[in-house]
Amino acid sequence: PIEGPNGEEGTFAFVLSLRQGLELLRKIRNAETPITVHAYIDASFDSMHGEEPWQVMVEARVNGTEPDIEQDIMITAHIQEDKFSANDNASGSANILEIARTLKKLIDEGKLERPLRTIRFWWVREFTSQRQYFADNPDAYKRMWVNINQDMVGANQAQDVMRVQNITRLPASRFHFFNDVVETVIEYMIEINNTELAQIQAGTEFNPVLSHLGTRHRYNAKMIYFHGNTDHVTFNETPIGVPGITFTNWPDNYIHTSDDDLWNIDRTQLQRNAAAGALMAYIMAAANADSYQKLAAETAGRGGQRLAANKHLAFRWLTAAGDPDAAYHKGRFQIEYAVERERKALQSLLSIDGGLTLQVEELLDQLNNQRTFILIELDAHYNRITGRRSAGRYTLSNAERRLSALSPHITGTARDFLTARGQVSTVPGLHNLMAFEILNCIDGERNGLEIYRYVAAQAREAGEHYYGMVTPELVLEYLEKVKESGLVEVL
Image 1 (cartoon, one colour):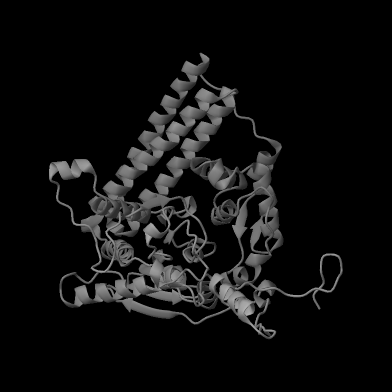
Image 2 (spheres, one colour):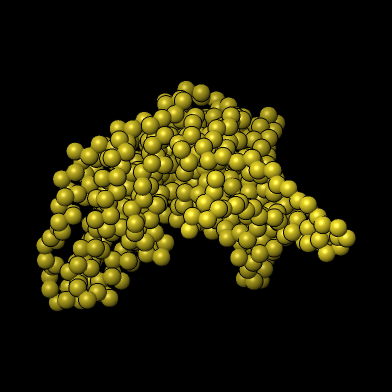
């Protein structure tokens, strides 16, 4: 029996769509005799008790020429949504089918070379299919290189002027040159689909991606910091660790309503997002020593821009600070974080071809030189602000000292995480995505203090309005909670 908040006998409630409600209201108004209604409810709360719903996946693949290269490109979309799901996520499910069909056709006709790596397509139940698969096949993720997820990729942007086709960057814990492939493709798609007056005046030729039956709208797309609201999260998360991104338009006033129907879909936006996803997948699948220079140029060049953005944060904090010594150390930690992240991206280039060691080492040396010069500039800026040559020594807080003595290790398997992940309670004040990153940064090498500094700097880079603030006290509390779950050992 259902009880109300004060112990009174309760009842149940459900929501009618606007159309259903208006139709019922019309019938009531026109009725000459009483109208009787009934409701049939088929519901359960099994998933709240650790029994996640399961649905068999559908897989297709475009085989690569080198099956022994265990670097499959994973393309995903989910299919379990209810009746009204044209954009979320019939659009993504349809798009990855079109990507598969198009790549196969182009390869079969000899218009594209068959890539080295296999491209796999998964139609899944959101979140749960992959987690169950990884639990049942604990080594399967080892042959997966990257993930591209398509979720909500058909929105007619004229139906809601706020709609933006967002594409996520990789979380800092999974940073990889793949991130720069994604950003390069999206910038290219924006450039060819959005024209400005200067281009017209210059007579510049461009070839927008347009569907015959679609709109001629701009491609209102942008790269954003990562979120975890769809299937790419199952690849990024511990203990899997496969870099994954998603296409997800947001905001969307029609999601999970009866208005998420075909009238809301634009064939042109579907085609653009399919083309972008196909291009990303093919670039990664075909990457080899011959394409290294182009990929390295994007990774190093964009990495330099990201370093400069973090340098700017450090300078701004120092200029505005009431306590310049504290601001100096915060800025220095920020720069060290950015350097470590870019080091991960450059080192990932080695996964293209093992013979690229010398070339990658040269880029890593350049990165170290950039770090040195930025820190010299930070010291000079501190001197200009304070008149002193250097800041005082950084003193660890009590929580930071405790973190520095901790050595966390992942002990749970994918099956353990399947059953216990939902039992780890949240820490008030800690953004759930930063908790996600704390867990992802437990690699057996970082101590607790290093994990805190890396995750806190990631949150600062995005801004407090995005991920909130990460404090050493919050990290300590979260590590204690995952330790209690048995998923992590903290020595």
